Image (cartoon, rainbow over all chains, first blue to last red; front, side, top):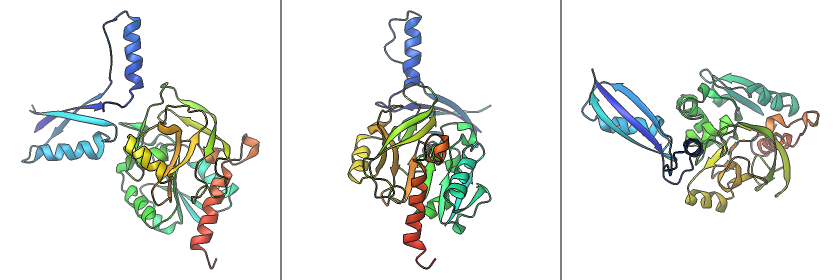
Length: 81
Length: 227
């Protein structure tokens, strides 16, 4: 089995109101060195290993896990267990 | 005209939609559970608002993977009117039946009030009873209604007259003030405001009723020549 660690982030240019709110809160805590915050998602998916696993993960991300209109994704595949 | 109101786990405007077409419009209508529906039996498909699958992952994303979507796609390809309101709109976007995606409202608040919409295209199966540029009062109720698409798509939507409703005062940050769009063919409409909550003046506004009357007129003109 493999553990796939997937990061989903909003594309550049897509407004992230949540990130902006977090940024403002950091500022109110006097972290004046913070210039931007973008909030994304992180998922861990346990899958059976197979030869073309990456192609299948790409497909999973494009079909469901990310919305290609607004989001990008990256992932790493690790040995599970 | 026989309307299917598709009920997903978490739909909560299904009965309002049913009431609008059954009682106020006077059409035949059924509430159909998403796993048991046979949409081939219906003339129009209505996807109600709500929080299908608890809005997990992204609003409408899980519902968009259910097998009923292939039936909705087939209905759209057959030229039947398909209306998605609020969560129904989100499902149409997530399933690729309409272009674009929904983001959280710009101010991150769930908003529930009546908005003034402008009818940008009064030549669709859903709007022929309105006048172009007419201002109508329709309630909104959403947290993720901030429509997003890239600039190319936005220009294409405008060129093809696919932008059907805009907000007079943009409440949610939506690109191009968009409140509702149709597909290129014009028979699939997605909109965030709730016309089914605006079918009786007693409840504040009946500006939404003509949307359903438009569908009925369209159906009569195209499919019920002998009826």
